[in-house]
Length: 411
Ligand SMILES: Cc1ncc(COP(=O)(O)O)c(C=O)c1O
Image (tube, rainbow, N blue to C red; front, side):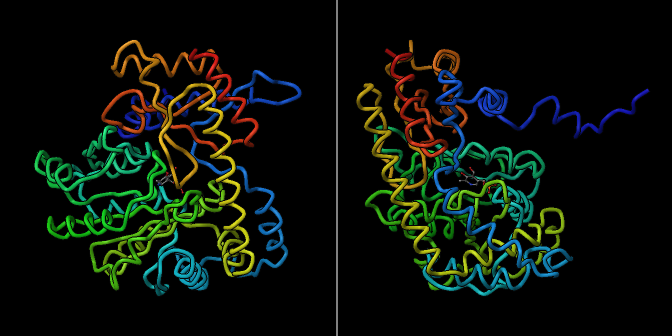
């Protein structure tokens, strides 16, 4: 007889944290679009990745491999080698944080997702609540609710005022909670809208969390992926000190198109929190060779500056081409200035304004256009009908082809 799984293991089988649109994506990858052999093939526009920069990264990442030092294959500090954290402090300070952080204020773990899971393990207890403004990155629910056993309370912003976050909405969510609220998790630039918050809004959430006596986690994983006119300002640049309650998150996954390398970074001035991160770091270490390769890459200022400039130019060109194709196809979309996605407003193509109608439109697009958009329900939107389109998952001409297919199905 096969011994049973634990109730925790069984629970994961019964309600897997991965949403349906991602299952559909991975299932279809084998039948992917090919301009020569498979013109009707699958085009996934549902994953926030920038695959338009690999030609820039590849020579740089491979060039570092032959110089791998012995230390890189041995045990080191679990939250990142001191040398790598020094390199990060300098690079992040120079490119977006607005000031340098000491290596003792920096922890490195296997991707932003691991940082989030371990960070929230240390900020809140099972059953506690965390506020997340929506539309939101879909993965926060898996990161915070699966093993940390927290409960996310969505703060639904509204389409009719451009999904603006206000103090009133935060107050309402906080006061409606039937459990202790321990933190606000705030993403800027926003995934999925691609909006960039004004410094006044960031100041507002900083003051609001202080007044409420809760932690503020600023997810800035798209800090460098800026393609519009609106400048990005990091929360770290707005204060001489983050104090013990504000923590900043960044990763290589997005700005350096390296989601598979798994390297996320936490900046915090809270020494106790840092010690608790260190205590759990062993289970999410970034491999030594990855730290070495990424550390050498970000230390080459000249290369970094050229990379950021080219990456932004490409994002801008791609954004213009794809929003132009949507306009031609008569598909409404919202403006974005950061990240590599934006929301399409597909409400007029739904029989009624319900989640069932959104779900059936998502299926219709997937089955008839063989294109996968992230449904609004996965982003925990407050209103049905807003789908996220990721425009850098494929070369621009392929994304344009996907939009044309979308146009045909919707018309
Ligand atoms: C806002 C945000 N935070 C965190 C993550 C997780 O990133 P990682 O792949 O580094 O775990 C993502 C990934 O899409 C994201 O969009």
